[in-house]
Length: 251
Image (cartoon, rainbow, N blue to C red; front, side, top):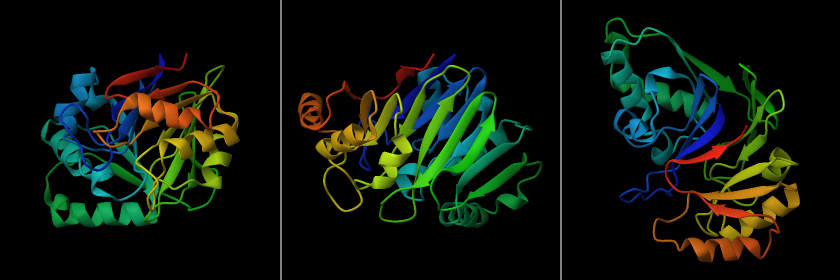
C-alpha cells in the first residue's frame, strides 16, 4: 500500500476539522511523518493511523505549526513503553532547536527513553534524506522566513513521485524539486512574504511539468472553488484542494 495522507491542511491558524499542515507517507508497513502538528496521539488515530508504527519523522522547518506536536509525540510514546528507535531528519536550524526544546523539558532525565537519532540535512538541493523499504526521499531548500526544506518522494519499483513544497514563496528550487513528478503538493497561504498564492502554486506546477496539483496550507476560511479557479489560470492539469485526512493513492 502506497499513499500519502494529508493529516492537516490549514495554514498557521487552524480551525475545527482543519489542522495545521502536516502529512504521512505510507509505503507498506513503513510510515514516515512529515512535520508534526496538533496532538498526534489524539489526531493520528482519527485517520486510522497507528502512531506506534512511525519509524521516521521529517521536520521541514522550526515554526510552531509544524513542530509543536513533536515533543508531545515523543513523550507519549515513551510513556506508553516504546522501545524501538525513531530517526528525526531536518536542517541544523530545525534539529538544534528541537533538541534545545527537549532539553528544556529535561527529557534526558526521563528513565528508559527509547533511542532517537537526529539526522542533520545539508541546506543544498537534492540532498538524500532516506532510502529504505523501496522509498527514496530527497530534500531541497525553499524560500521561507527561516531555513526550510521541501521534499521529493519516490516509490519504487513502479510507483509514483510526489513533491511537497512545504512553506515557501514561489521558488525555482521547488520547480527543480518537482520536475516531472506525478503530484505536487504546494502551499497556498497567499502571496505574502515566505508564502505563495493558489495562482503562484499553479505557476510552479506548470513550470515543473507535474500531472496533478494539490493545494495545502491555506486559510481555513478560503473557498475551495475559488482556489481551484485561481490555480487553474496558470496550470492546465487537475487541481485538488486538500482536506484533512484526504488519502492520495500512489500505487
